[in-house]
Image (tube, rainbow, N blue to C red; front, side, top):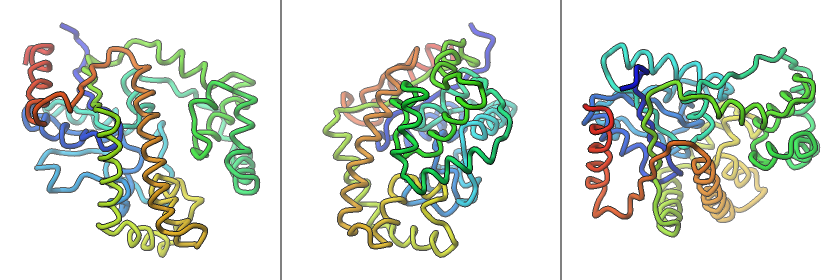
Length: 316
């Protein structure tokens, strides 16, 4: 038996049913859920982030949800710090911490206790890069990263301006070192926890159908009105929070750049691409247990099997 603290991880692509699974396991195992999602932290961004509702929480304590204003910047370093604190709080209550989400880098940062080298805060360089992105577009900024760190450029989408800038900052402040090399080295570390890491998956066609239905439901629930309300509070496309899937496209439609029909099409397409990248990320992880949810007769049978594995592994 390991003397490390136990950590249950429920991960997977968007629309795979992670939140429901984590809540049900928390109820069965006396657990609390810690969100590893880069958008659900923001207050007032409920529909587009598919944020778990109070009803869906079913009384299970949740951490790192609705803890940031959309005007504030959320990043992996802040997540790691707060997630560690949440895990300690859950353990102190005698409960099982369940890290749940689809942001692989966030999960990795906690699981392997990644050391994010503290660089000198060079805000002038960051502002210079942000200005370049505004003037010449994200693709130009991404081309600079391709020259500096090809592996990082391959892993980071051009539209993820925040991560592109961080990689370029790392390259400059470290004297030419590559963030991809740094991250690879950190991934080789031993796990900081006695962790069970489950990744939910399903037939690709079924997953894409679920994504399309989810986007249609978001529109029915009032995604456009949610984005309008955020705009009325002064948020624009330059805010990190508004660069999230769904929000950016609806903003473009509201400004007249594209039609609302085009926006919905692009959201569905980009979300499917995002899900594909999520699965690719988790395939590179070590010691992952893949759960093909569509191979079970129903969700209950799937969770029953996961619970059985957990209890056998940890002697619960």
